[in-house]
Image (cartoon, rainbow, N blue to C red; front, side):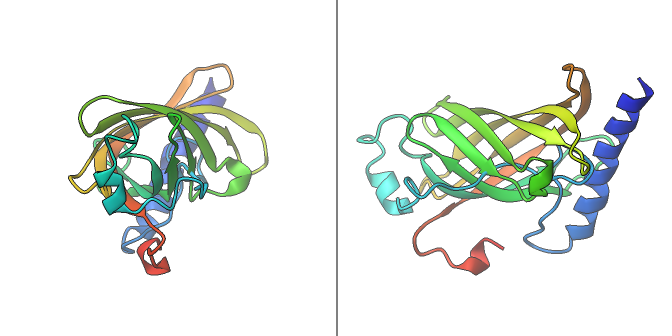
Length: 203
């Protein structure tokens, strides 16, 4: 029991310390909240869907079906809000996400790859421009020991041009037996990446 409490404390303290260290930067890269004390959050892009420009996504949304407007490559940022132990406004992850036409999603976190930097998820449309996402990650400590699974949920809404989305997220970290050891809440923001996006926009 003490080891679980210690792990949970390291999760929270690691997120806060790493997040605060990067807050002054506009595009902070930091540890992902749902995993461990040295981690960061979700999704690597696959280019099969990434060449859809914002204008064409909007114009063809009906033809592409219910998932058409969210499909593509996104820069995503997770910002803590109302999480005990983490100041509001702390960037807890700043990674990449790819939303696919078949209702699946993948994210590449800014956390260290050795600790488990990928999350895999599924999503469905919940409103005219809104989507619910459920995805999971496998977390490891820096020594390579399995911590447990993390569940990340998002509820997001696209803007009119479908080149940005905003919403809320929750991250729940569990130990290997499924016991909860950390819970983080906040706001998530996504900016679409097109074939014309410069590197400065994703730093």
